[in-house]
Image 1 (cartoon, helix red, strand yellow):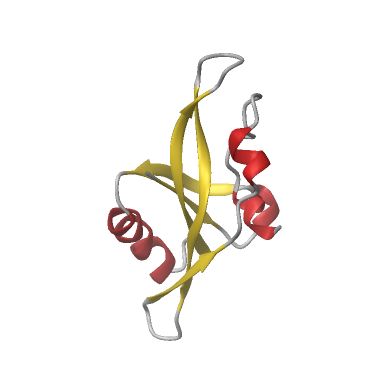
Image 2 (cartoon, one colour):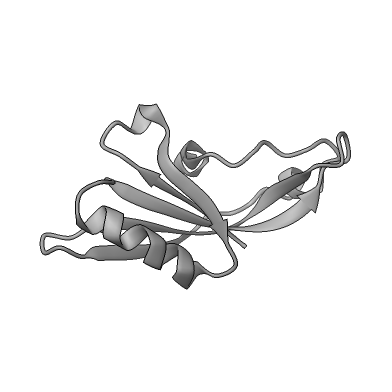
Length: 108
């Protein structure tokens, strides 16, 4: 599964739009028009695995470490940069629920 967030020019304001899809190509297709026409500054797509929270039996998403950042190019288009970050095993296997996904989690 893939979580995506469109961020505007004010990054502290939070996502302008966000969602979840089954594949990365769908997330990219949803984000590209908004980035290309200037409605969003960038898009962050993160691959996640759904899990069940032990504390509240609610659905949560655990990051796998793979993510993509989409930025506007000089021509009206979008450049996608694939990235990977190491996910701490303690974060994956702990008993309490991992924090909900936020775009600023990639800044670590």
